[in-house]
Length: 433
Ligand code: XLS
Ligand code: NI
Ligand code: NI
Image (cartoon, rainbow, N blue to C red; front, side, top):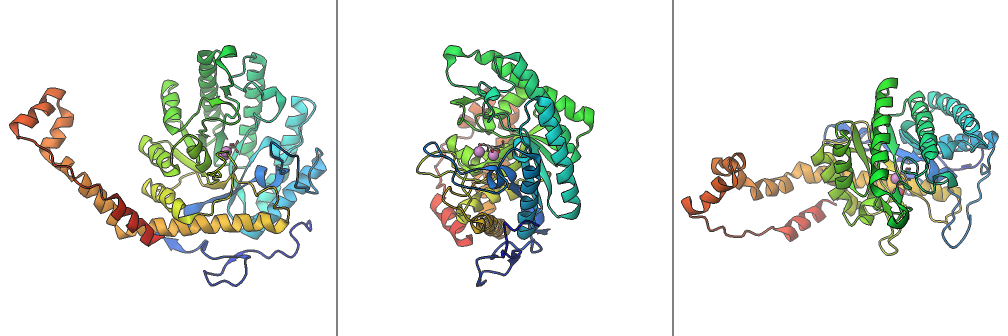
């Protein structure tokens, strides 16, 4: 036991009237919502990187968070894992997620980094046996080290492509060893800064072939988890190739991977792309590529990917409404790819950030379930599209443009616009949150 979280109790559900801040007011793992336990609906995961590896810097200043496990040795990496699992025990969430670089010190060579990774994976594996938290997904950090500055699979230097292949292979192996349920690829540097030095067509082809190789390797090793792409329009690259869900879908179809790869959708990335979070979820579900969620939001004012914890349950209810409509998660879950603010120095801040985020999501899930149970929103949508149930309307989709056009004269059509009833439906949503 470390003493980092000393005096912080295990967090339990105490209901909205709880008198301590160290309690869940809404997250009640065993409560059954729409026939399923809340814990199984939400599948919360703690992100190793922001919670245990982020030092609190911003573009104007260096580290503010001083953690006793910061440093590049294996002993400190083990201490970090100890503290992480102590926090997982306090929160009681079922999963965590990590990059290689969060968990192990960088070596002087690839072989040394890999040895460090294997060693820490053994250590994490032992911890998973004696603690509740398991791996939701693993991933590789191919954006922080300077070798990745011009991309990983899209790097103009083929030797970096090889390094990316070796890195992803090592991380897929590690994820499989830890029983991870998904493997995520987020391409922060898979994009470009200026077309004056970039062969965009070649870079996209290299990225597509790389993803095919990842999928081929997944089948070769019998990894049963899901491969997930995490769309993001920009930051750190000025333009990233995996801009949003629609762009990723087109990319997957181009490389024949739309049945193999799904998406990990992040709230803040959706906003950066000019969409709402629920739009990205609904579109992924419609295209059959909805996988998992990173539940971290941006600051709407600054516009950066600030990765803040969610605290607006009404807004998140719209997201969970789409997740429930899509049938919920299969291998995915709700990952907090979220950072505390750089002034939030205390261990308590880290715990309470997660408690608040989990309660926000739990409240949102309950609201979304109530929206579905009432049936009123679904009924309004059914009613709005009811005209499409008539034989004449269905026949239009089966026939050609001329047949569809002919209806105007043969049936004397003069369509009357109908109210979209948006405010009434927004009032309804507000009744459930
Ligand atoms: C960065 C991404 C990153 C991924 C994992 O914006 O959200 O944290 O989730 O590499
Ligand atoms: Ni992000
Ligand atoms: Ni993310």
